[in-house]
Length: 478
Image (tube, rainbow, N blue to C red; front, side, top):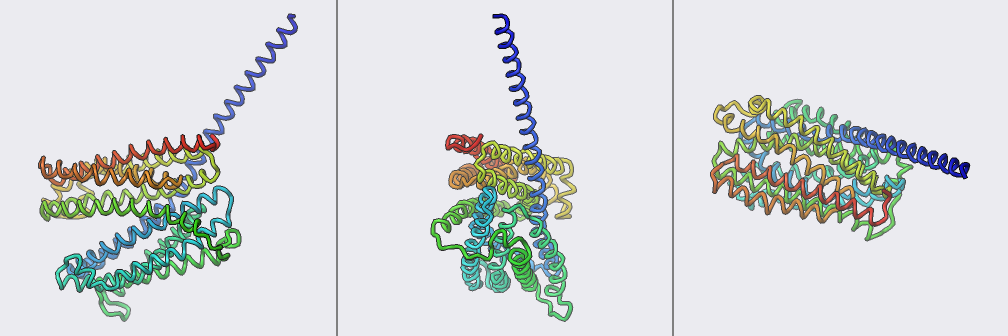
């Protein structure tokens, strides 16, 4: 009897020891997975952020060179670029299905399917690009519809016509870059954008100012530089993807069979992304108009604040893209645990970056404002906005990362509705209250934008928790 009790006790002790070792091993594996995800997010995010900053750099050089050439030419460029950028942003939203489904197939180890996604996306990109080009080519008529004076309409129309010719090439480059990012290879896109920035400096110098035998063309010359660079980027990326890269592994030369369901699946993701971009960009455009009602000084202050916020937003966009890729891979593996790790790692990683940017806005608002203007009155009005922008950075960046995380999990409709509700039904009424009813001026607009972004963050984080629970219920691995 004593022997039985002794042996049973030893078995219990052994079982407890094994359970303890197993629990310790699982905890160690869990921590290693978090560290690996953080490393992969960092490794993907840095090249993407540099690419996005490179795209910002292209526009910055264009603005500086044209601005030095002539104020009137800068006005032509600004008006044409506003419409052209909005259309291009919506088009890129329509093509977001490329990166989502490429990452999803990559996570399942279906490399040939990654190539199929690319081959289905390229004709779609060409179709969208050609349609937008055709829409923009009767540019003088388009500018007339926007209510521009005849002399401004004529000057900006010539710029828009040149921009229009480069839209299909810009979308082709975007699709091929999305394919590489979806297969965790963002470096070629980064290198191409950096080279494009170098070319852009010399091209602007030649076409805008009239050097190397070219006549001075002002804003039209800058548009020619932009279009030329887009052609170079598209051709260069085609060579990388189809000729140099691992094209045999992904089967990029293999024509996919006709499948309407697969085509629709790629488009469905894009519809939600395009709607999100349209709502957000459209809302900010309306706020821009409202700021103009407060006078030129208020509009200038608002424009500077929004530009500061947009530059920080680029960093969040890089983290969001990286998180979207890793989330697509995790969903492809059907691992809820990995999906949670990716989502929360992206959230915390971005939060750390946003806190650093916010601290800079809090500590150096005068320095930041002085980069944009030397007008003392405008500086006095803008500095409080830059300080408040520190909160804007945190919430706007967070909602950008979370919507990308959900997009990677192929959750499209609800996040789009959440963001639309935040920007239309929360931000717009609050702007009217804070700015016009309670008389807070342009500061009131910033308050309303912060509240809307904060609400969007809450909606999207809650949605992420719910979507993980849903996938658990559907039988994904925990």
